[in-house]
Length: 409
Image (tube, rainbow, N blue to C red; front, side):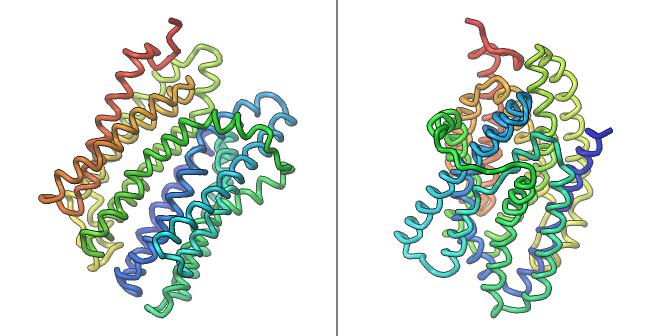
């Protein structure tokens, strides 16, 4: 029952995350316009890029290390908390320095870009892995609910026109970093933090594939929007951003489920029952995806159009692209979290993500003349499909794991 309740909170958290951009984006486009929306988005992308590269990319590593620590007593668990937060502190400091250097080189040291540089430093407080390891999705849900409520109140109370642009930027920057800050403060109620740097080299080496995956993933997560924004209108960039936001929002459901069952996979591999784990969950995941995405494709457009209003012309083809993309990415996430990470074969994910990072821009360039602003997203979907095939091939024919165990050869 506890597991079912936690999963319910995880899904509810996903739903509120899905509603948030659909409520805020139309209001922002009407009050500030696409130009200012795009201006803030560009500054925010720098923060998202560097945070993703240096902190968020190691979340699976932190989840694995902390999950193992939880099985070895309270003292080991507390030491793991301090060790991981210290590691993130060092990496977020590096990220902040590099972000400042980049915006200085690009002559972008305005208050807006500096604001998003400052909040990058506080990314070290991101301890989502702790709540995921404990499968405490109730805390994640109520934390997110309170923050979202506060942000919505601030937006609708203080943003009334173009003169409120910097207020809007402060509010959105706060929405990016508050989840990490609040999570850290909650965790500090149970753990005492002491800075530990002695394990830095071990953690850096242990997380190297996660860093590589983060670097590769950044190509199709953030850089594509920065580059395509140079060649399309602000409105088209807004539509592309909305498509990616909807896809990532829907993807948060399989992400939550996969992270929720990840501790079960750790226990399964420890007892040589990983095969049963896959038989139990994989077919169920595919069934849920097909049914859920079919409903989204057939009935999602009227609901989305109602939220967006007349500022954005959304159509059925976008829903088809989103559905195909989510299906491919969900399978990739399952293989990664339930086999590759469990068997310490992150290199498979690295190779798969490399294929995505290479093919995405290639197909984006090839398709740009005909598909314009949609080309990066379609290129990403093609790359993701090939990436899944690479993961399957590597597991079966190269490492011969059968998705269950490493080759003994």
